[in-house]
Length: 342
Image (cartoon, rainbow, N blue to C red; front, side, top):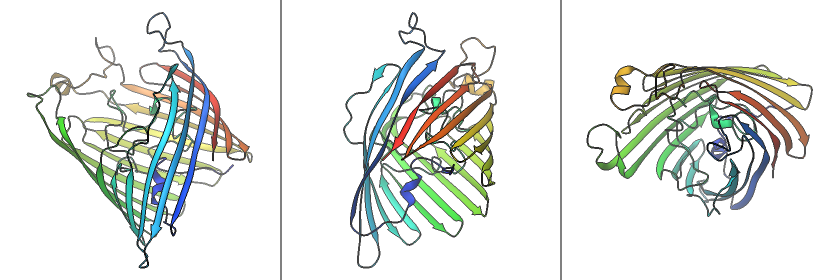
């Protein structure tokens, strides 16, 4: 089975641009999701529900006589999770790009340098565990219920309306990104929380040499608890692969170990384990959430999470995906379903 190795589902945005072209692509996924955190008698949600998503992606591109490429992308998608059907979606925020040789400039609904760091997402079709990612607990940047606190391409919203530059040459890739939100509340819980413009900036450097890949990224942010540094390393042995990742999430460290193996020509199994450090008492006193075990009111996110994912290629762009995940707060999920691309 050919493994799909990628940083994120948005990474294909770095592909070269052809002459004037309009392309429609996408995927569908549907299946069952068991989550023991749900209870129909407590939060009104059954432990077992249907999870699904249908996504259409539109890519438009043109090339000038001098070889400069221009492109744009937007998506339309509909999904259901926890027995709640998402509202009818209009198009998400557009991203516009300019390319020349190995250089790309994007504006609008940008990818984001942290999001594009190789080795942070799982090597699965959903980039996480199971049929819909199972909360992406496997990502070392997600700690203390402070999930996805970095700039990333938004499939269901307007995105951050930022700017970014990417450059690739040989095995090297560099990526810088910047965004600013008008009237954002900086450092909630600290000071007066007055609305003002808040910025994020990030940089990512990656290098591939043969079967080895290394990457490092850093984000600075005006928002509370959003500074983070990530480093990853991976080895692709052909029908197997192994990866190590670590992130310092503004004082909360998280390390992850990941491995996957092809079983015959059509199957792949992936296992992973992460460990999240405890938040400091000083940060909690300053308004940060508490992940420490055995503390009243804590989210109990400190400690070890692990998971296993199995994929079977059905051919024609379709596959069967299933996975089990236990989070560090002892939340168990199990998912199984079908994923198909077009």
